[in-house]
Amino acid sequence: MSNIQNILFRYRMKQGAQKIIVYLMILIIIAVVVFPFYWLITTSIKFEGDMQTFPPIFFPARTTFQHYIDVFVKSGIGKNLRNSLVVAVSTTFLSVLFGSLAAYSIAKSYLARKFRTGFLVAVLVIRIFPPVVTTMPYFLIITRLGLYDTLISMIITYVAYCLPFVIWLMLGFFQEMPHEIEKASIVDGCSVWQRFYRISLPLTLPGLATTSVFCFILGWNEFLYASVLTSQNAKTLPVVIASYISDQRIQWGPMTATGVLLVIPVLIFAIAAQKYLVRGLTFGAVKG
Image (cartoon, rainbow, N blue to C red; front, side, top):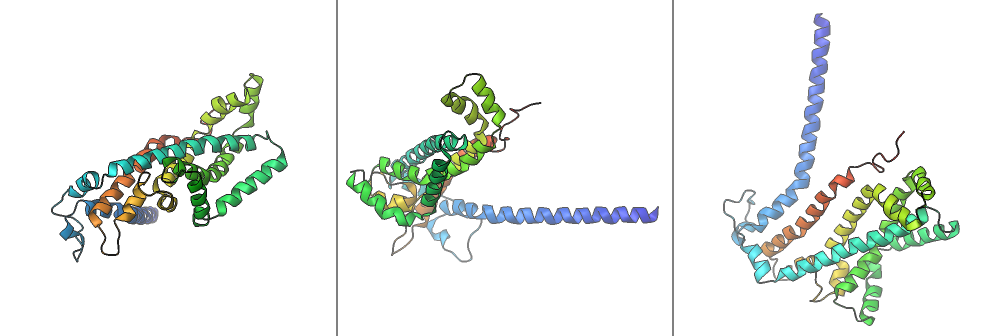
C-alpha cells in the first residue's frame, strides 16, 4: 500500500507542478500582451513632468484628464474620430458585401472553371503587392477624379485593398458549407439570391464576423493611404497621432490620449462579434 500511495503522491505532485508552470506561462504571456495597453492608458493620464522621469512611474500617484480635454477642445479631434468611424464602417460593410458575393459565386460553381481560377489568381496577385507600391497610382487616380481629401476616396481605396482578403477568406467558409443544404433549398424553389441571403449567409456568420473584424481594423488603423490621400477634411485618427511627432519634440500626452481613443472602438467591435466567432460553421443545421 505504501508504494501505491507514494506513486499516487508523486503523480499528483507532478501534475500540480505542470499546472503551476502552465499558469505561470499564461500569466507571463498576458502580462506581455496587456502591459503596452496599461502603459498607454497610464501615460495618457500622467502630468507632463511624470512622463519622462527615470526610473519610470508605473503607478502614478497623481492623474489628470487634461490631455483628453485638449485633444477634443483644442485639437478638435471629434471630426477626425467621425471620419475614422465613417471610413471603417463603410469599408467593412462594402468589402464584406461585395467580397461575400464574389466568394459565393466562385465557391458554388456558377461560373466557368477557367474563369474562376484566373479570377482567384488575379485577386491573389493584387493582394501580394505591398501598399507602398500602389500609393502613387491611387494618388494620381484620386486627384484626377477630383476626390482628393474626401471620405469617398478613402473608402474606395480601402475597399479595393480589403476585397482580395475577404474573397479568399470567405471562399473557404462557403466551400465547407454542406452541399445538402444548398440542394434542399433548390428543391424548395429558392433563387440564387435567396440561397445566398437566407441560407448561406446565416450559416457563415462566424466567417462574416471574423472577416468584418479584420476589415474594420484595417480601415480603422491604416496610415499610409490616409496620410497621402488626405490633408484636412478627411484626416483620420492615425494621421492625427503622427502629427504629434515633430523634429522638435513628441507630445506624449495628446498622442497617448488619442491612442486610447483609437483602441476603444476596435475592442467594442471585437467584443460585439465575439459570440459569432465561437459558433460552429453550421451551428447544427444538419441533423440526423
